[in-house]
Image 1: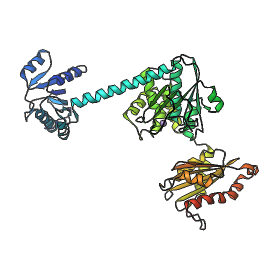
Image 2 (image 1 turned 90 degrees about the vertical axis):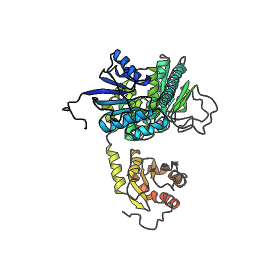
Image 3 (image 1 turned 120 degrees about the vertical axis):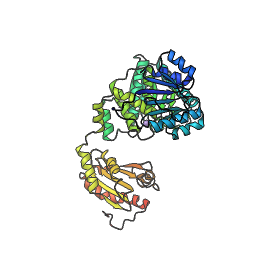
Amino acid sequence: MADGGKGDPRPKVRYMVFGCGSIGYNVIEELLKETNNILVIDSDEKRVEDLKDQKYQALARDISDPDLFKDLPIPEIVFILSSNKEANLNAVEQTKKTHPQAFSIARAVDLFSVDTLAEAGADVVLYPQQVVAKSAVHHMKTLTAARSAHRLYSVFEGWTGTLGVLTHRNPDPDSISSAMALCAIAQEAAQGQLTCRILYEGTVGHQENRAFVNLLDIQMERMTPEKLAECNHLALVDSPGPGINNDLNPGTQVDIIIDHHSIEGIERSYKPDFIDIRPESGATASIFAQYLQELDIRIDTKIATALYYGIRADTREFRRNVTPNDLYNAAYLLPLSDTDLLDKIMSPSFSQETLEVMGNAISTRSIKNGYLFSNVGFIRNRDAIPQAADMLVNLEGVTTALVYGITDAHIIISARNKDIRVHIGNVLKEAFGDFGDAGGHGTMAAAQIPLNYFSMVRDKEDLLKMIIDPILHKFTDIVGIDDNGDKNEV
Ligand SMILES: [Mn+2]
């Protein structure tokens, strides 16, 4: 008979525990903190009498009985914890058959039983030896994380003057929020003796990242050699060493490095005061969230919001390289964050110009052999160009998108590429390197060609039309598109 709903007249019990050896007894003790709605079943009659003397509800029954649940109440949750392998298997099978709605947790007596019990229908199988091993490793990790956090804190003690916290080049929310958190830790640890400055190189591109910086009112300064010289101490976040994705001289003495990028192949000529690199972490912000918890430093809303957003952005909304630890840290930060602000950061308004550039990129596109070219004309906001390239490379039939426009002083070219045979960074470098700055990665690259004395030309759109063909010619030559035909296939 299947278990009935509310109308079922048979008695019910919240927890039914089969087997009351040392493990079973400890489980009962834990469950009693919540309820005494527990029925214990053990084959040892003497044991059952002892339990009854202790005012537990207990029954003597052979757990290998093929009619195990006869005359027993309907359980909600069944614990199967005896030390008898066959008896436990029988109890799992009987539970599945008689009370399919009940949730069952079974103890595997040996490694082999782990699979057998799971196949028989146990919802959770515990192999105590493995549970102890996992718990030991977990404790070890928690301890080392705690130790790192306290070591970081103690590094700042006695520091005075200025600490420069460097993000990586073109900083993203992971890097920026990590820098903010490091400043918070440093200022508390140095008890007001330390001034912190967040320094960055490159640009904060993409409207979502700019919204992040503006809405959270983050104070950052562009790095210059003068500012660097004013710093008594240097820290690097979200970058594994000087000269790697930052504009520091590779030999620069950096006192603190905290990152989650792999360090294979990095040689250091000196040892920083503090270094914590965890390639297993989905975000540097996640490492900082853990420090702040370990150190019990009060996290203000701004930092919590920034770190949460940093973890979220670096793991592509918890979908890429995300670990349980990242999720745990994000869950810790979320209630401390400003969710209205998060909403605003994640849906920043497009500027009119961005929209216009996108529109121009779409309407002027031409495609040849999978290569898309778009001329967006004269622009003020150059960030709109890579965004247009990002969008257009996803167009059907397009493997590589090249979007270009002109500012007062430069021709700006942005390329996106999906063709694994082409390294677009190298192609741009070869095609445009002689005219200006050009290069990038295999999938994304950019070039910036100074107009020099052509910058005096009033009508920039005409100028672009006049000079772009010979410039692009080098590119089409390299990638092997013949220029004779009409490029407009669309
Ligand atoms: Mn990162």
